[in-house]
Length: 161
Ligand code: ROI
Image 1 (cartoon, rainbow, N blue to C red):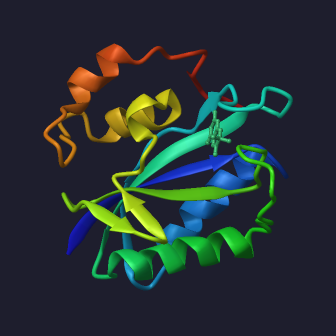
Image 2 (cartoon, rainbow, N blue to C red):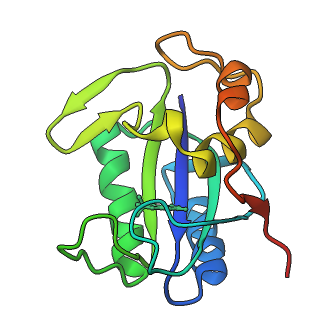
């Protein structure tokens, strides 16, 4: 079994419900074991500012799926929850599931780059990941507990109803 981490993000169509539903879809998936999930966080948009705030979280899973099979599975969940891919770069989205880490593998495939290319600078990824895996190191040896000291929270807060 491989341990992988998946980032969850949404800022459209009831983001809290989108995130909760995505976590439930991971939990119910026949080939995925949901091990842990961070709190839900509220974050300001990275990219164009004329879009709603995001809800973000990170899930830890275990799976026998290959990286591309896992990508197919996460993309299927995105589509089931109404994701429509738009041309606009960094525009709003109903649900984004990004594979952050897949064991300690480095993957450069036309469909998939792991570790996720932006994860080291995104507070809405690093803080939720740190909540559930404070002792984690990235494949290049970077320690999360070091990384987190370099990243501003940028308004990131744990979401509360
Ligand atoms: N900004 C935030 N705060 N959270 C996200 O999940 C997120 N996802 C994205 C872009 C558009 C880059 N901005 C984001 O894909």
